[in-house]
Length: 552
Image 1: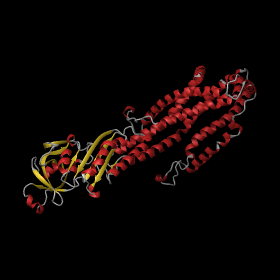
Image 2 (image 1 turned 30 degrees about the horizontal axis):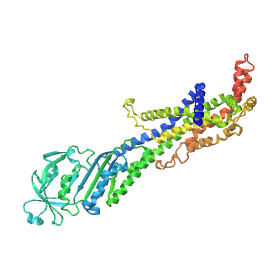
Image 3 (image 1 turned 90 degrees about the horizontal axis):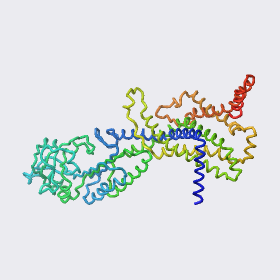
Image 4 (image 1 turned 135 degrees about the horizontal axis):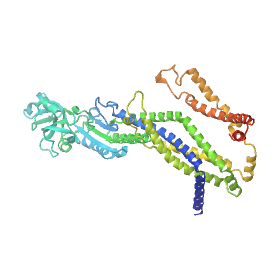
């Protein structure tokens, strides 16, 4: 209880100190919001850009390996398939376990909302004969080599030219649908009866034409293959297939297809590794239940490329954002130093009265956390706006009105939060570092140091500002010699922008090192101006210049 009371009183003290220095704290908050906003906008923008590219790539016809030309597949479409022509036909009992897994558990394993599930099973090749003259069928040429199968949910995506959909119960004959193209080719009529014979002729399946179908829309996402791929397939209901076809054939499953369409609109860079792992788990389980069951079509390859390119773009944007972020963080450090120097006398009095250095640092830590929480919330909102604004920027020769440019789908991600917390952490450190130095003084040592001439900063005493000029001068020399960031001696395909990252950092290093050099020469300039002002009438200008020379 005493600990809670102490923390509450310390928090109250920190809040009062924030209010007493509200103007400086508002400046600190503004810099923090800008820094967090810029930092968080980098992963948000990179993620949104590559999310749009990923969706466009997966929507393009033929973008996924195995997709037929002209076939549209949704971005997160998965096509599982077993092909008996390659691995042998299987029994219904062999098919049932993998079917149950992919229809009932597979979507949960992958972890995305399932929008559509289509299942398709068909037999091997059978010969179609009319019912008359069956005794001499072996000497006759069949009307058609065909197969018998079903497609789940077919009724909602086709229209009947004539007839009706197959009855689930069936009868003596298996009711089937034939495509309009096949009906016109062979002259098939609704109500006609035919017989399907196996390859050896020992299996007979009587069928009756129940209806003639054509697709409602051949471009619907329901069609995992083009509808014309089923022109020579006799389609029945799943119940009729299980009840009348499966008992007749020893291995009725020659081809099995499971077509899943997931909603992947909210998949982002951070989600990709887990999603790829879950897809691999589902693949392994399906192959274990029925050997050679493969995932023929999926966004796996596109997701892997998306993850690599998103990381690369984030690194590039971070490198190019270093100058601005560095200036913002330096501004935050300056304001934090002003805050501590303004309260240095108060710190000295507290230390003289028995306050420990840890308690002083705790006060400043709470101040930093209070400002940092506000800066984090405002910075993340600013980062989201910046990412959306960058997404609406015009490209070359784009003269559309701004409101007609499609914006990016910007969503918060763990990477953006991580970048924001990094900015807040650096700001808190910038506040604690001078507080740690100030907390080492009592009132006696504080007055003694104030009476002494101010020591120059550490980087000036050890000439670090002059040493920091060496890398940008070398980078400038390389740029003058090479003429460009990229080496023109190599083809564009072999260009590696990170072969010499120093060239990317040259502008930022020049800004930083020249600023430090200017801070070294600034007091000399002020002393010179003060010497000249001593010859002028009045004292205001002279006192101002001398103060600037002493406290640059």
